Image (tube, rainbow, N blue to C red; front, side, top):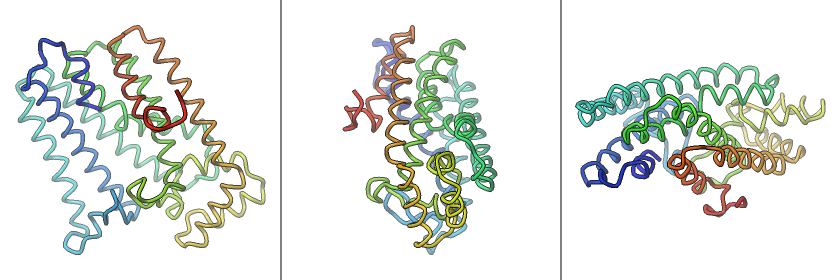
Length: 293
């Protein structure tokens, strides 16, 4: 996302091999920060599989040294950022974006853990507010705004519009991730879902509590967050009973069409091309084999 944004917005006269390489360096900085985040997330969640392989902290010669390894990755990212962009005019802004992103995702993890203690009283509007403010920043906004900044798009007005639209895009990604954690095949997702076993505050459980009967809610309270196959099976059956698959399909369709309307209203044709490029790779789009044109 970072590299493609940068290449799409960079003037033709500046598309030299040296400049394009800068975009890839910046993209690797994004990857390093995200890798640090997922390593910590796997430790906190008790994750077993990441990208179809055993999680780093489960390796016999690593274990809790993974905490320090994650810190090395993050600080190494800042070293790469300074070495590559320290002499550029945009360096301080790039550094600011990374700091904001890191702080946002750490606050997001804190809020996620906090609200997971009271998930059965969560409402969908509150859930959406939480993930919009604390999680979508690093998922969708950060990678794109970094590419924009490197290409010279730094006006506050443009940043405001971009954040609004990309926050919607990030929210779609998060909803999809929550849904797939419960129902996607391991080889499709690349990791084993643990949200049900760990009792995390996720979209399916929030929707369930809004639609379920008192008896269904009581049964869900008993089994959600229990780390055994029987309880997981009961939770999935309860989700099926409220027709979660159709609810997700309808909700995703609404999000998609609202996003497209906002993109079409954008007055900046260059940014509109960036937004549409991102939409093309969304799994809901026909370009990615999905169902929405």
